[in-house]
Length: 554
Image (cartoon, rainbow, N blue to C red; front, side, top):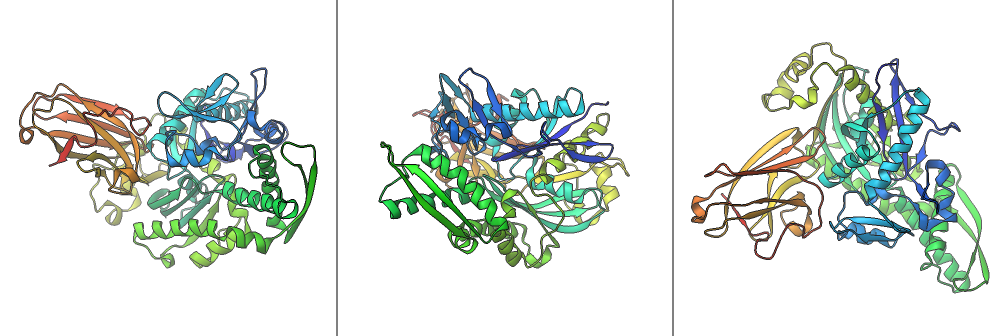
């Protein structure tokens, strides 16, 4: 069998691996025929690990040794508000590492979130190898469209740690669009509404046969099915307090059991109008058992969770405004992710977009299938240039409107009639550097088509400055405190001189994976520094003498 490239949806709650064989996309099951694999890793006391469906039972039996939803931590600095918010929700301890990133502490080991992702990916790699009867070492892995530079790079590291060559990182909604439209000769605008376990993305695309052009994307990395579960956990703890005047909210073991039960109730309410359960728990610190009869109707669930769904619709409105589109200009609505099975989500999206969602698509599997489709096209084009890697720089601005699809394929290094899809994606966030006054000077705009390169020129803020530190940020605000620091680039040994005579050229380049490279050059000497940035803590690489006031825009 020839070399294959698998497609992997590395999800917050569940993961899926797929492959294209003889033109057909196949979702790979485990030994029991299960095609959806929980992104759960249980660490046994003997040092071995259990991953996937078999690890689920340990969420209740051994919660402090069972890691879930690690994707919510991946690529984030420990001091970020998001990580601080999540720490109290997990039963396993999270501590800072020397580099300012979070670590999950189990026994005497400290696991980075990407290490957990790597174990899930290695497990999926093994499933694919067993199913196909051959070694697998290449994959296309999907990420939320809203993932920033640090999160994308951490995901790529996870793949490499799992023994995979990551051929491409593809945004999850774009992968879903591939599964929906590739080979169908569609010419339409489509909304991919992707509501998963821990993240939400919405992407607006224009499909022209095998060209998939992203018009805009928006998302929330901390909005997902977990939020519905947490809302139900609060309802259950409140019910115990009303019935028995006992507060169970502070007992992490109880909360974890409630979380597992909440997910079951949420899924049952998808099919049933009402769910009733008797729940028994011990009062913390005693042997006294108390019980409640917990009943929840679908209408009550909707009332409790309406604001969660409405947050996703606010993000949809943001994407529409970014693309300068009206809802009526979109032809089809595709729902992706397990949370779109919730009737409330289906109802509110139907009302918001004023159209019925596309039927016949498995929301749990469609992203992995799209990744497999793209992986198959890469495998077939190993002897030809990757169209997306050729860049858009040589293409005239009028390219999109004035050229037909055959011209598009030629301009992108893709021969007419070649079957591979052409993905035209965008940057989800603006990218820039901190300058005087704590302002982010934007070098790469949000929603810019990738790959792309932008250059700006700056001067030091003081005379005779021999060193400048460039704090690099991602975000959509001009205020650096509202954005995410990605890292720093330092330019040293600058000959002293009046600040108006010193000019620093700063070049940002975003590749087809959506990852950033930064180059800084002293224009007088040609001295330059280059870095592919990785995530760092908020203060990494910045000292008291040279802070975020080193540069002035010129």
